[in-house]
Amino acid sequence: MKLFAALTITLIDSLYSPCSALSLSTSPSVSSLIARHTDKISTLQKAAENYPDAPSDSLFYLRYCIGLGSEDNDEDLVSKLQSNLEWRAGEGKLICDAAKAAVKAATSTKSQWDNAPVQAFAPHASSVNKFVTSSQCVTTATQKGDLVYVVRAGKIDDSALMSEVTVEEMTDFFLYCREVNAIVANSRSIQSDRLASVITANDFTGVKLIGGDAMFRKALSAASQKTNKLYPGLSGPTLLLNLPRIFGALVKLFKPLFPKEVRKKIVFAQGPLSDVNSLLEITVAGQPRETFMNSLDELLYSET
Image (cartoon, rainbow, N blue to C red; front, side):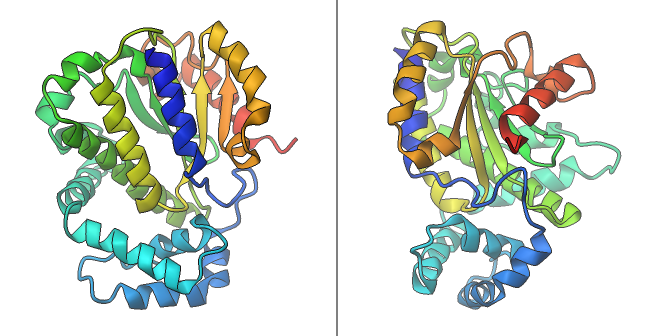
């Protein structure tokens, strides 16, 4: 069952996918967080000196301080950081370089974001972009300044897609998307002095209960596991939207059995995006965007 598999992947990944350590509604300023963790940041920056392409901004290292387990000591943080930097200098270098170039091109004119370079610079773009378009997968900013990465998997012909790319290639594409989002989130954080998170919204509108490509799910799961390690302190909650009624009933039954940390990370809701034909509609001013943004305010930013 395609839906069951997708839902299972999301829940399992969430067991070891740390949310931002901060509340979305009461996020402290970036400057105050950097001041609070200045000693650990300095330790991490010193450990990164042997990596010529290591990020120089303090925010990159701050996310390690707030995004990993409280049981991690300085030695643990350094080890995880170095593993990340080795990936960036080796296996992930082409992905990171492409994302950096894409964001630079997308923001070359200050008037608005141009998504065409982001699509063009993506790994295996000539194959993937035929099946994954902005009507099925978009990132947009919330009214509070976080990013929300919205995926409508039910509208993607995953079997046709995976006939043209390998699991590894599809995994690279998902990692590229996360790297682009990380660059943008960090830039927005510095500009606003508010730590931005990346919220993932899985819209199950149109998802079939039976069928689906196993290789696509494998790539999605592989990318999720890697991003959890490569981007600490970046992920916000995961939204599971518009589950079919039978699964909605099961969720209500089993949600209390989930560990508390998982319940904090996953939000189930019916309604948001259900009347939206193309996800592009939530990226421009108009009723679909206003309605979706208001839903996010209620689901994620309410302090009650």
